[in-house]
Image (cartoon, rainbow, N blue to C red; front, side, top):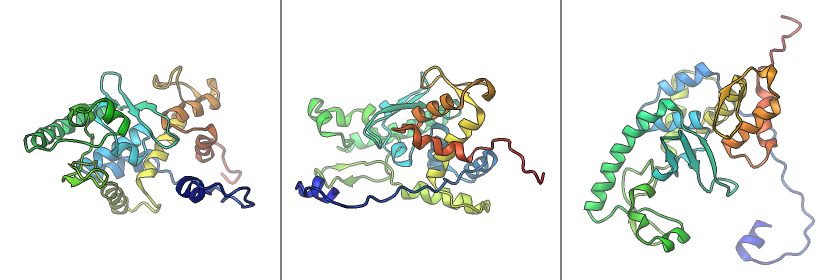
Length: 258
């Protein structure tokens, strides 16, 4: 159906076909202590990315595609633009990441200035933005927060640009860190996003708005409101996607054997 509608642009007419069932597997989630151990076993830019995934609940590709304009240090907010679902949303910027991220961006700014001095320094922009603002691709605010180490040729335009960092580096770094501390689970960058949602629900956070988190006692707040909060922060289109994390929480139910 995707091939005919999106690629060939042909209407195949009514098709009697079964849709694939969505996976019902529960995500792997680490304890807070295990997350600390994984992050401590990492270093450099990969550690900063991993801390951002866990601290803000970003998908890896959303984190790598962040631009300078998306990070609001004053309001401790991150804007996730055009993510899965094609809807922008806000999430939190942890206080503990403000100083490390600002220090990182100082190095990125020096790199951008050097590229400009050498006749480069442009970045890919969506077509509509590039048409409305022809010089925006050179501006600092549109550069990637995590740029690649080397410039490369953009196959879409043939321009030599500095793209964002690839996904393989952070993925390998997270797996290596998990193996080094012998965690018997399949740990990926997405695991840190799962931990963000689960640990927020465990902590009993509630909010009158999308970002103003304040700890409250779970018995005084309905679980549905907490799920709604996490849904907004993670950018889930429907609440059913977020509800999976409530199935892996510790509900303080003791076994009769204990």
